[in-house]
Every structure is written in C-alpha cells, then in structure tokens.
Image 1 (tube, rainbow, N blue to C red):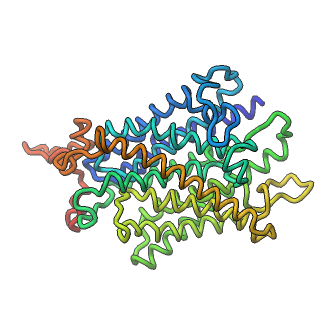
Image 2 (tube, one colour):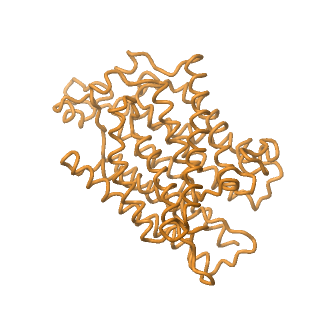
Image 3 (cartoon, rainbow, N blue to C red):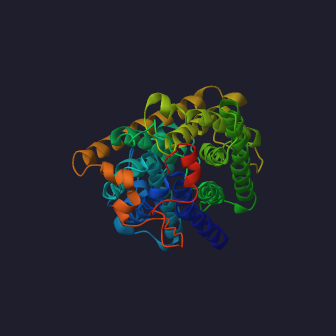
Length: 440
C-alpha cells in the first residue's frame, strides 16, 4: 500500500497542476490582453474556495454514505471521522472538484464581476458538482448514474465535463454577450500561453485518468494494477493524438488553415472525450473516440455564432460536446477483459462488441441526467445572482479592461524608454490583431 499511496500522491499533484497553472495559462492566453489576469484569477480563486468547501461538507456529500442524489453533508463534516488512510483519496477527489468548477469560467470571460464569480463558485460546487460526483464516483446500488442507471464513467465525463459544459452554456445565456459580439471578433492575445497550458493539461491528465483506478483492500496489485494503469495511460495518450488530427483536418476543410489554437483545442477535446472511457475501451476504441471528438468539437465550436450564445472560450463546444461523445461512445466500443486474463477492460461489452443496446441506453441516460441536473442547478444560481448582486461589469469597465476595473492591475506594462509609454494592458501582439481589424 505504501507504493500505491505514493502513486496517488503523484496523481493528485498532477491533477492539482491542471487548474493552476495549466488551465489558467490555457484560458489566459485565449482572452484579450486586458482581461488575462482576471481570467487566470478565476481559476486560482476557484481552487481556494472549492478546496475549503470540499473539506467542510463536499467530501461528505459525495462519499459520506448512500443516497440516490447525494450523501449527508454532516457525516464527515470537516473531515470528521475520516481516518488518516483516507486523506490521500480525499485530496485526489478535491482536485476534481476544483478543476470542474474552474472550467466554467471560460464561458463568461471578459465581462463578469469578480465578486459574482466568488459567490457562484461555492454555490455551484454544492448544488451541482457534489451531487453529480456522488451519483458517479460513489458507486453504490443507490447512486443514480453509476448504480441505478449503470452508466460507466471512468474519470468524469458526466460529473466533470458535461456538468461544466452545461453550466457554461447556462451562464453564457444568462450573463449575455460581450459588447460588440459577434461583430467585433476577438482573437487570443497570446497563443504561446495557450499552447503551454494545453501541454501542461495533457501531462496533468495522466493523474486525472490513470489515478482514477481505485485500489481496494482485496486487490492483487501486481498484474491487474499494471494492466489497468498501462491501458488508461495508453488510451489517454492515443485518443489525444487522434483528436489533434481530427480537429486539424476539419479545420483545414472548413477554414483552409490548420492552426496552433486548433491543435491546442484538439488536445483538450481528446482528453475530455477519453476521460469517461479510459478504462473501458481498447486502443482501437480510444483512437476512434479521439478522432470523432476532435472532428466533431472542431465543428461544434462554430455553433455559438449560429445559435447566438457567447461562449467566450468554447467551453460548450469542447467540454459539453466532447464529454457527450466520450460517454455515449462507451456504449458502442466498451469491451470486457477476456475471462481468466489479467487484461483490463470495461464493465460490459458495447454494441460493436456484441453487447446489444443495454450499455448504449445506460450511457445516454447518464448523459441526460447530468445535463438536466447541471442545467437546473446552474440556472437557479445564475438567476439568483443576476437579480441580486448582478453579473456584469459596467460597459466602461468592459471596454477599458476588466483587469484594471476588477483588480487594479495590468498584465502588460510596456514602456518605450523615450519618455512615452504604451497604454497599460496592450501587448506587442495586439498590433498584429489590430492590423486584421481585431480588438486586442
């Protein structure tokens, strides 16, 4: 068990890195230069707030006992009665709660009050993430998605990505569009930060997926542990590679260019899609999931312009769509391990492996439950904030820069050295954007 504990501590550290700095860099580079600090702060403060509410009542709501929708928040309130041997698992699951909440921020970049986000974070974690995490990760006969419905979700396609994606869509609709959108196009102000963030997300995701193997006391670690960790590691890698290809192919066909932003987005789309399926499919299944996710998500991100919702950083197109693809495709390509072997595999065979429609139906039902729960919970919270403290910064603050208005800071302060200066918040790369008629 000492070796397994060390393995889980490393996995926990990798997932912690996924929020800060990885997601903060990924999102920060995609925003305008005058809102990059605010974007990164939304990830950092989500980590701080969700971590605290997790240890107070979140862990108890998820793992504090049986319950169809959630467990009692009082059973392990403040980690009461949690043995020291449970702290590593508790911290691993804390990182999931943190990044799921932080993911939502990309849908409302450039236009919301920091105070509104601070209020939203603990409420959403409590009403949406903790219940869905219980339904998926606290896998008892009573838990809805895993137990009653029987859907497979290895590391959070429903509880994490569909949950965050639906929340992002609801907030984008309630908060409203950025000033001038979509007429005034906005481009990422620093793709170098975004590419770096994507690379760090990829590395951190090995903790996310491979670490989701749960070690029980009667588990013979030697062969099966090696088989399952090796499979999830390979599936995570190869699905992501296939997603990059899928995204770039569609991008080239639709827009004539294969872009670095497309490659970074393809990385995330592949990682999202393989998350629920990492331990349930073989290599061919992983490649299929990644290729489909990359291609479909590349097409889906443009839907916001046709449907009229301002999802600033494509949370809906990548996390919601990618999460649905990965979760549903389990019903097609899940495959069980051969009897008597030490090869890892899914709980049941999918449709393409002779399993019939049972698994596919369960996966679709799991998706629908996650969409409904997250949509209703997020809408209630979003409307409550809208009609009390309000979501939006002033028009002037949005135009001048949310970093200065909300934090009194600027990410970039460039001086000419000859008595003049460049206005705070303008970056060197903005000149190229301006040349194309794009606001920085």
